[in-house]
Length: 466
Image (cartoon, rainbow, N blue to C red; front, side, top):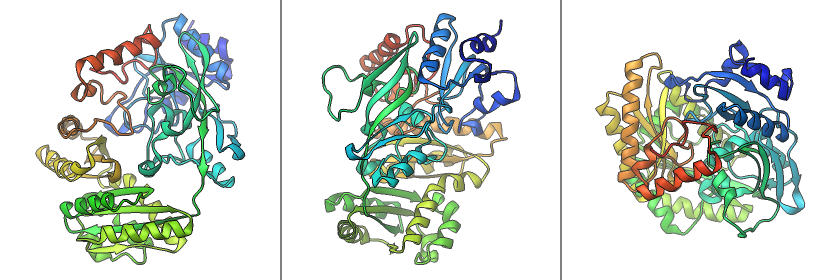
C-alpha cells in the first residue's frame, strides 16, 4: 500500500494528497524556486487538528518516513522543500480565528493563521503584534515561529521569539506537548520553548502558540535620509545610535535596490525629491512611534541626527503618504526581482558599525562573479539582504550566484556576524554554521537534534551544522 493510502487511513482520504498528482506540486517549492530548488513528496498531509498532526508524526516515525512541516511556503532557505520523498505536513487547516484576550495583552493562535490576519485582529482590539515579516499576507505563524522570523520593526520590538510565551508542539515519536503558556515569566526548567523557536521543524512541529501583545501606538512617523555615499549613510546610522532615541524601525537601501524600486516611491511620495533620490548611494528610513507627542518628539531628534551629510530629508505627515511609504518598502524585494526575473538573496548579519563594509563587499563579490548586486535590509540590526540578480533560466549564472552566496557567509563570519538573521539555515545554508561556531558548539547543536529526533526524520537535511 502507498504512503498516501496508509496516511488516508489515519487522517481520512480528504486530508491526504498523493505525491504524484498535480495538486501536490505547490508543496514542492518555497521562495527559493528561482534557484531551481524543488523537492519530491510521496504524500501531502492536511491535518485539521493538533491531534492529527501528532498522529501523522506518529505514523511517519513508526514507518521510518521523513516528515517536512510546512507553513505558507514563503521561506528563503528551502526549509519547507521536501527531500527524498518525505511526507509534507501542511498546517493550512489549523487556521481557526485567533483567540485574543485584550485585557491580558495576549493571544492563542493556531499555527496555520496568516501573520497579517493576526496583526489586523490585534489592531481591532487596540493591540499590536509587532513581528512583521515581509510576506505577512502569505506566511503563517507556525512558519514564523519555526524560523524565528523578523521584519523591519524588530529593531525596537524584537523577533518572533520575543513574543512567544508558550507552544503546543508535536514531538517525536508522536506526542502532543505544551511548553510554557499564558505566563509572561517562566525560568523553572531548561528553556525548551526557545529551543523549538527557530528550529525550522527539525525538532518538532508547532501546532499553536501563546503570544504576548502590547498596546498599539497612537502614531508612527517616518523620516527618510538620502545620502551621497555609503560612508555618509553609515555615519548617519551611527548618529542615530548616538542620539539615544529608539526608532521602531531603522531600514536601509543601497543605490541598486533604490534604483529598482524608485518609480513606485516617486509616484506615491509627493515630497520626495526624485532627482536627489536617483543620485543617492544609500537611503536610511527610520520610524518613531508612541503617542502622537512622543512620536513627534522622537522624530524631531531622529531627523536632526540623520541630517548630517544628507542630500535631503523626507518626513511625510499625511497618513496616505506614510502608508504609501511602507507599501513601497514592503515591495522592494519584488521590485528587485523584476529587474531580471530572479534573484539570490541572503540575510547575513554584521555588527552595526560594519554595515557599510558589508554593503560595499556585496557589490565587490557580485562584480567578481559577473553579477549585478545590491542590498537592503534592517540597518539597526546590521541585517543585510545581500542580493545578486539572476536570469533564473541561466543555470551557469545561478551557479555563479550560489558561489557568491558562499562568499557572503564567509564575509559575515569574518566581520564578526552571522550567516542568517531571519531566514534560518534551511537547506541552502547547510554547513555554513561552522563558519561562525566553534566545534564544541557544533557538537551540542548536533546532540540536541538527536535528543529530539533520534531517527532523524524531522525535516531531514535542514539546519545541518556542518
